[in-house]
Length: 632
Image 1 (cartoon, helix red, strand yellow):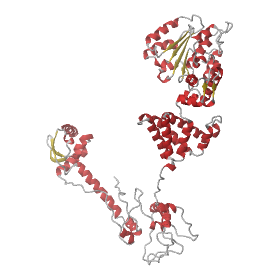
Image 2 (cartoon, one colour):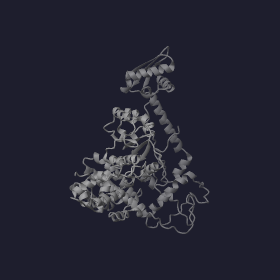
Image 3 (cartoon, helix red, strand yellow):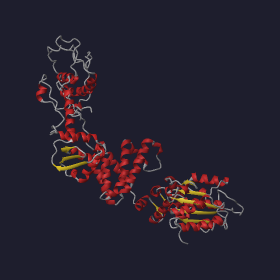
Image 4 (spheres, one colour):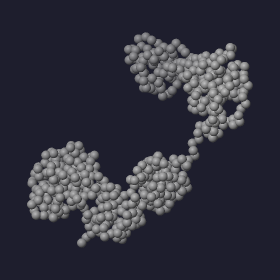
């Protein structure tokens, strides 16, 4: 007798034998028991999860007559009557299985539907099972809609597909849809153990775990891999042999990679990648196992009790979970996941694997040079400020003592200035402490303003470095730093070099015309960059323009500008364009006006009495270049 593969030999023959689809079994069993039978069912799910099996069990339930020949519709087919045996053997005349992948045309569907008008020959119901129904053509779907919606009472449709998104909604709305879930690895392992026990084949837990993981939720794939493993191991399943058959990466290699990443050991990471290359192990499989390991690490950190204590890898998972922070686990998982997609783009898969591992290493804090803080090293070393004496101190923003000298004018700081200078003062304190470890002698009191009261300290911002908008320390000239009474530096204007504009009457009239008309795209660029050399008005407007760019002197752009101006002025416009450098164009006038506004804004700020007073008050104060902008 010929050998029958395990996937066919151990196909379930009743709902009780079906593994991992309890939600479908419960719904169908209740419907059969209560007699609430729908005329069309749609089973969806990945390959090898039981779509065809459920269809055959449902057909047996509808046509079973019991062992005594007097039974009816039941959720527990006997498996002994002629209907049950014939359906299992594939010879029941009233149960038709159609493969839509090879019979996808309207002719095949029409031929099938033509037989629907005839009652069952030997059974109670006719059952049409259409597998991979999403492969049917649009015309075939349209041909079966009417029969699918209102079939004869003795006809039941069972549709199966792995891609329900391709099934028209008009078909979905006529069916009861059941989604068969992928098999959990625990269900696959337990079922394989039962099958191997019935077959008398010895197998260890590691080999079953590898097959269940490689099946990816498909029980048929798991049984097929088991057949292959039995042949590979000469009637015995061992983890080493199954791993070699599958080309899977030994978990010790993956654990070694993670340990090297935790230690931030670059040579060890490269050695692990080279070892995988020398053994011929799959780079994609390595990244897949890394994803599984990082997933287990995340589970161990979030819910330690959720791990399977029977799994021999659990000890390594718990050990590594305590050495790798949770955020880095998530980051490395994401890198491994995306790295699998990048392998196809790499020069070779091992180079891609190595780059993914080095990318993980570069994000380890011990694997890269720490980012230097914005403060110098000696400032960072003295980050903790020394304790201050308990003596009362002056208010931090008092610029002058409460009792000023008669000649000195009282200066009150602005609230906004205080708010800006406060963080600078905080940053300056540790820097001053580190730069001057030795206590400074008390400075001699100056005649004006009056010396501070006992226990008072000078304002901390006097020694604080100024920073510009980018956060860099502003450079102050040595002469000014050495002379506290030196005049403040003049603000360098950011307006740029003055525009070489030579105004003309024709240019003024052209500027007013261009600003008054709505012009867009290259036509506007031509109008703005052109200098008007002559402006003659009459029944028609004639202008001679000078344009430097060759691309703007194209006739098509000139014609578009003529059309726009003609439409706006309600009279013909004639433009002549000649090459040359313009000296008075609307663009030059706009640029000159912008420079004038910038210089005026800078003049207002520089000449402001408060700004002058602050510049004189603080020896390092200055106006940050480029910080003045006019309000348009």
